[in-house]
Image (cartoon, rainbow, N blue to C red; front, side):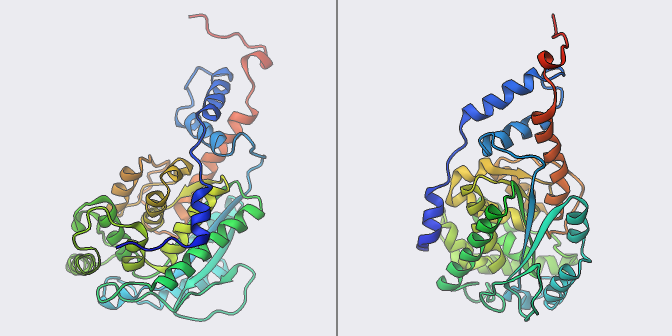
Length: 359
């Protein structure tokens, strides 16, 4: 089955362009002229060249950075797939708004503007300057029994993500990340990963928030039943159909956010397992979007490694993290900024009056 592409998303897809090899070559040429042996800064040079190509060489320093944390509950949590009760989603959103979560600490430290978006939390929140109330519904449906979203709900959630990307563009953020919060969302991410990569469910399903082995096996069975119900016999599943049936409201919003950010030529830092599942859906809808991704880190969740391999991404960090929230992406942002500043500010052999190599 296929899901019709909403008009707003169709317009976004039409504006996503592959990177121009000439822009990357221009950056690589300058990097080779800087006062260092060629290639001696390793992956920093590749990161700098990619950032230069994404932005067509129009980066303004210092980099403006933004992280959008999308939150939603998951109906599949009723199947006991998480070690934590579903009310933790709303409690953690309150923690974000009070500034007490890991993502708050890291965003403050690295000067990253933080926006929290309620895409589908099963609770109501008071107004807060950092909160967008964009609730599609109070949590997705139980994917084991029925599609996680209706067609209309999926389209609404995609619109939320596009609006966030437009906001990032208006605010002039060059470097953006999407984080998430949603009890049960590793189950959705595992189902998406199995569908897109064709890996066995057991290979892409981890402990999530810390479930024991018996609960993990039960989680795997829930995912198998959901995939059998909604995607049986599909060798090349439609990404929007996958998203509607076994995804989540925050995952849908992140998928559109990545697409919108690529349209606006933003440097996109992917986070952990759930965010990268959304990135893989975005890439399935618009293959050139892969060139706009920098993988912030590799999570301990087994499915994350499969997704990174599927997308052809190498993680910047390997810190054995599995928190989500955008923490891995924001932690990697100073490294990306370092690469960009080297390209922009380091002297060339000619400007510094330094002799070049003779052998």
